[in-house]
Length: 251
Image (cartoon, rainbow, N blue to C red):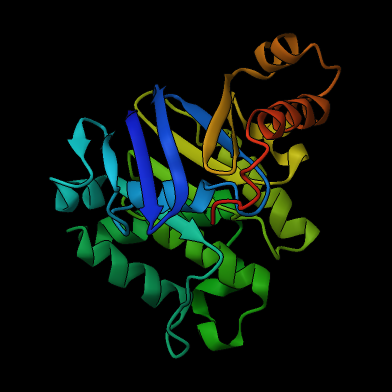
């Protein structure tokens, strides 16, 4: 579902992403774990065709993100903290509008909205104008909008940020339940507990570099750590020792 080969992104002399090589199969929730500035968002923006890589390549479901961006956009859904909603429209109107972009009929859109309502507990968001939403309501509709066409690859970039405890619980439950053959969810976060709960495999990023990738037990064994948090800090410490002059983090 995802293949990166020596993927890099540079801004002048600053390297935001450095020679990342990675293969990710479908049927799973794949975590990108790293502190703010690790390069997670840069990587996801390249996969979403919002940024061009400086070198290397990235493929989503066999399509090259640089050479076939329109095809990639048909296959993905994206949620990040900076996405807005049209204030005058209700949640149902927003979802119907996006369903139309992907060629769904009104009946198909209504059926899909009903599925998402059951999964995400959209409730009154559907018939309330977005300008009146709480943060949690806004994020639920943003997620529903991203998956209205049932994308092959869903990119969640800090999607739980700002959610209250109930909305966060609904999101994590939905991510876990959405795991299916032929589908891939990329879950980017700096919150260790979210990775531990929903991710099948994890890639650890720091300063634009891929430090390790594997299941949680594999990462613990590799670092001889007792917890994922301990494994993460050990990997970062080793990376900083190997790159003592690299004090600037990726963005």
